[in-house]
Amino acid sequence: MTETKEIRYQGHLHEMQKQLMGDYYAQLTAIANGKSDAKNAHLLIAGNPVELVRAFDMVPVFPEVNVLQLAVRKQSLPLIQKAEELGYAVDNCAYVKADVGLYLSGYQAPYGTIPKADLLLCNYVGCNVYLNWFEHLAELTGAPAVNIDIPFVRSADGEPSPGDVDYVVKQLEELIVKLENITGTSLDMRKLRRTVENSALVGELWAEIKELTKQRPAPYDAYFDSVTMMAVLYCLRGTDEAVSFFQAARAELSERAAKGEGPLAEERFRVVIEGPPPWPFLRVFRDMFSRWGAVAVASTYSTVGGIWEFGFRHDPQRPLESIARHMLQYNLCNRTFLQRYDQMARYVDEWSADAVVIHSVKSCRLFSAGQGDMREYFVRERQVPTLLIESDLEDPRYFSQAQLRNRIDAFFEALAQRRLTAASDAELAAGAAR
Image (cartoon, rainbow, N blue to C red; front, side):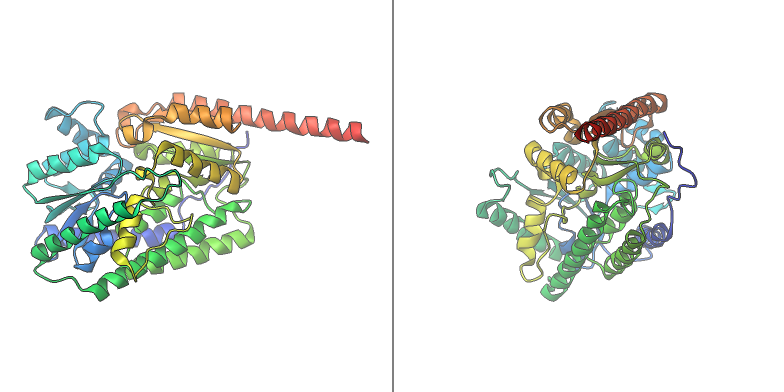
């Protein structure tokens, strides 16, 4: 094992993101405190129609982002316990419990105040907990709620049927009427097209950035560093600010790639990571991989809000249809297990990964269900070394640092030994050939 030195996790991009997210939460606080009359809609990250929300000058609010911010600050457990006092089970989604606890605490957070929703906009993309979550919020807050039903893609080629696309588009048209009633304004199609065009530009830039980690060394970690860019991608998608941020990110990371600079002093192992990170222990978790020189060159979590690296782009000329396709097909949460396998296999092959790491989340059935079979598939069918570990994305009670470190150390020790054995066998074969 090589102990890496002076690992720099935060740089210019982190500072840019910090400024943008600070401005975003200042905007939310102004709404909550009555200093802004802007309307807001609470949405979920996966496969959402945020372009429509922004076309009405409404501000999107993302409960998942709010509670992960609390987890990073190690302030989620009291809120989770507050929800459990109401009757939420210990194994309920920790995001839901933290968000309910945040509401019960007056929506007061260290990064700002969350405004009560003018609209709860839920979209079903593979997780029935989403529906229950927003139903509970509607009961608690009295805010109006809209649910957009997103069918699973059922075809063998992964393409949604024309009927499914039309079904979602019709729901988006109904949503437009609802947004017009809430805001008192009519949809400006030029503004919608501009917002969709910005999403297309961001998607293009994000895809180019993800391509950079195919190089050796990867110029950034596509799991731990990606979360910095994902905050802007999800909270500000459709805005000019998001386009500017990703243009700067592409320039900076392309320069690092050209110089052969990576996030670690030495890139020894290239891994693909499945599943969300344990937010309360993000730095500790990262260090468990960094100490082995392991860099994530791709991750499924970075595609929760959209999969652009395989070709999807929003289309400003067909805005509603492209939003519908994004919701149906191009987000991780609405994919079948076989489609998730294929996505990860492409990462392993095209990004030249040495191994797969699956982080199973205790309180999230959407991610954790079937991950044991996923491990077996990559080990037995693909002959890819695969590590399965477990904790939680929000609840610190499920994180065992010593246990996780022991398992990760053992896995990379085995990988290192396997590499040495392969090199030795190659030398013997070369000697025999001579």
